[in-house]
Structures are given as structure tokens and as C-alpha cells.
Amino acid sequence: MAESSAHAAVSHDFGTEEKRVIFASSLGTVFEWYDFYLYAVLAPFFAALFFPPGNSTAALLSAFAAYAAGFLVRPFGALVFGRIGDLVGRKYTFLITIIFMGGSTFLVGLLPTYESIGWLAPILMVTLRLVQGLALGGEYGGAATYVAEHAAQGRRGYDTSWIQTTATLGLLLALIIIGLSRGSMDAKAFSTWGWRIPFWVTIILLVFSVYIRMKLQESPVFQKMKSEGRASKSPLNDSFFKYPNNKFVLLALLGATAGQGVVWYTGQFYALFFLVITLKVDYVTAYWLIGISLVIGTPFFVFFGWLSDKIGRLKIIMAGCLIAALTYFPLFGALTHYVNPALEAYAAKTPISVAATDCQFHLFVGPWSKFSECDRTRDYLTTRGLSFKSLPAEPGKSVVTTIGSIKVEGFDAKKLDAALKETGYTPAADAKQINWFMTELILIVMVIYVTMVYGPIAAFLVELFPTQIRYTSMSLPYHIGNGWFGGMLPLTATAMVAASGNIYYGLWYPVVVAVMTLIIGTLFLSETKERDIRVYDHSMLP
Image (cartoon, rainbow, N blue to C red; front, side, top):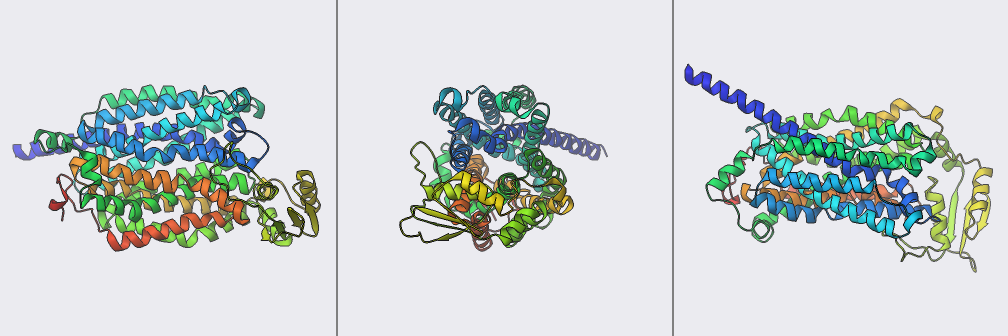
């Protein structure tokens, strides 16, 4: 009887500790994602602040390139901090990462703009984005590993799913703080200095997060491994240069995290940019639409994490990739129909073509980039949400744009404006014409796709790798999948749209990557939910 009571007390204590670990780890990670995504939400706005004027698509691509830079460097942060986490400990490492993240984000709020110091402004901003990316590269793997190693057997999907909510909650928090800042002042004040407020708020969140994390204890699984002398002396070598772990790293990337990454960024960021840039919805309305979808969709992270404890992680992730790949084109087409029916009607009745030579595909834009008249014309049309047909050049003419029955030779913005006005083009979405219910339903569906692929992924990755190299091994494929495949999505899709002349063409990028992940994951990965994560090498895995 006494033994039973003691066991109950231990179970109760473990449950309390488990909840405290989940809360503290998740809260700190929310703040870190908030820091990282402030720039992402403001990327179209930053195009005018930190890059030269004159070509809106060039400035937007430059802003997206800076946005992508933070993602591209994340795998290097995974290598640096993952190694520290496997050698020194989980708690110590993600204390460092949150300090780096918070400090660099606060400094973004102090940066002068392009108008003040020219090209030095984007250089400084990109440098801080790189620091953010390095820090985030070490944060996620630490938090997910830490929570999973505290979780009871059979609850890892549920427990780590709370960590999975943090990216979305961080984005939601960023939308709220930016929305409050923009709503409390006029547009000129926000452009002058108000945009800095969300970055300054970071210092408060940083102090609170560090205080909470200081109270945590090291992972019991890591402590046990260290006490038994089983820790890896070279986690990088053991992770990436020893078979079969290097095989699992590659399979985790191509068969799980790449597809998960593009589904995540399509359903949240690309949807936001599509509303604002293509469909011409005002920023505040777009923030509300995305914010509501995030609030409604976020509990599904926990649901699919819980469900993965019952039926398995892999099949849920694969199902999310499949459904997303099959439905993205009709869903984004439906967004146009329900958000800006005037734009849809205009495009249906007004054929547009561009006959030109010297058209280039621009991805990474900078001082080295040169834009032809064709490039400027395509920029003009795609930033107005208009698709067009590309035709061979007319003899002796660099570019001829035909809008309905009106022809404009060369690139002349005023003549193009007049042609659009004469043919009935409406430059902004009419809020009275938006079908709010159907728009929100579509956005919620895309967020649910995100929760399907993202909710179970932390538990899956933790279970895929042995304890002594878990932090390092899971962090790299996660951050390449999310940072490179996912983080490059807005930049790549925007460039694809401009090059093709089709406002939906950029969706081929997430569709192809999701299908690749579906095929590789289905053929070469197996379920992990029954594994005991206390095992130390792959020879001991079932």
C-alpha cells in the first residue's frame, strides 16, 4: 500500500515536472519565433525602408532575399549549437540561443534605413538576420529534444506538439504587436519610427524568457547518458560521417522535413503575401484574416501530436503532404475568387500579353542586378496581381504590352496605368466584396495542413536518432528542410511568378517538394512511435 502511494506520488511529481518543462520550453520558443518572424511579416514593408526605390519587385525580392538569409544560415546554427547541446547539455545551449536571438532582434529596431546610410543599411540588417538564423538553428532542436527526453513513453507526440505550436503562436504574436503598433498611429508615423516598436518589445520578452529557462534542470536522459560515460566525443562526425546515421539524416530531410517546410510556409506566410501583394488586401485586414486562421488552427498541432501517439507519426505527415499538393492550386484560385472577385473578373475579360526580348529570371537581387524593360514590365503587372501571356518580341521593339486592345510600347508606367484604368482595373480589393466566411475557411484549411505535417515532426525526429547525437542529428535536417526548402519559398515563388506571368505559378515549388517528400518518406522511412529514446545507437533500434 505504501509502495503504491509512493508510486502515485512519483507519477504526480513527474507529471508536474513534465508540464513545467513543456510550459517553460514552449514559452521561450514562442518568443524566439516572434523575434524571427517580425521581419518576415514586415518583409514587403521593409522593401521600401531598406532597399533602393524604383522597382517594386526588385525591392521586394531583395527584402525576401534578406528574409531568406536568416533561413539559409539556420543549418549552420544547427551544427554549432547542436554539437554544444550533445557535448555540454540541452539547457545550457538553448539559454545561449535565446540571448543571441533577442539581442539581434532588438538591434534591428535601432537600424538606420537606406535613406539615411544607403547600402550599409541592408548590409547591417542582413548581418543581424544571419545572427537570428544561427540562434534559431540551435533553439528548435534543443527545445524539442529537451521536452521529448522529459516525456513519458507514449506521450512524446502530445508533449512535443506544444513545442510545435510555438512557431505559429510566435507568428500570431508578431501579427498582434505589429497590428497594434500600426493601428495606434498614422501611416507616416509608422513608416518613420513606429515599425521599430515590435523590435524593441523583444527586450522585455528576452528578460522574461531567460529568467524562466534558468530555473529548468538538465534533461534526465542526457544526465543518465553522461553519468554512464556514453556521450559522443565527436557528435558532428558521428552524425554525418558514420553509417547508418548519415543515411537517416538524409532521409529525414528529403522524406520528412522538406515537404513539411514548404507546407508550413505556404499555409502561413505565402498565404499572407498572396493576400497583400497579389490580391491587394490592406495589411490590417490580411493580418486579421491570417491571425484568426492561426487561432482556430493552432489546437490542431496538439491534436495531431496526440493522434500520432495512437496511430503513428509518419502516416499523418505523409497525408498532409499529399493533400496539400493536390489542393493548393484550387485553394489559391478560390482565394482570388472570394477575396477579390473584381480582379478575377477583370483578368477573365481582359487578356494581357507581353512581347519582349531580354527577359531575365531574378532570384537574388542586389546592386549587381540589371533590369531590362521586359523585367520592369513583368514587375509592373505581377505586383498588380495580373497574369499575362509571354509572346516573341515584335521586330525592332524591346517590349510591347497589350492590355485588352490597348498597346503600350516600351516600359512606361504612366501609359500602363492609363491602360489599366481604361480597361476597368481596380487597384485594391474592396472589403465589401470579400466573402469573409469562405476566405477564412480556406485559410483555416491550409493551417490544418500545416498542423498535420508539423504537429508530429518533433517526436518523429527525436525518435529517429540516438541520444548521444540526437540534438545535432535532428537539428540539421530540420533546419535545411524548413530554412532552405521552406524559407526560400516566398523568394522563389515570387521570382517564378514574375518570370512566368502567372500569379499561381509559384505554387509549383511547394507542390513538387511535397510530392518528393511523400514518395521518399513513404518508401524509405518507417514508423518510430514505439522506440525507446533512451537507446544509444542505431544497432539497438528495432
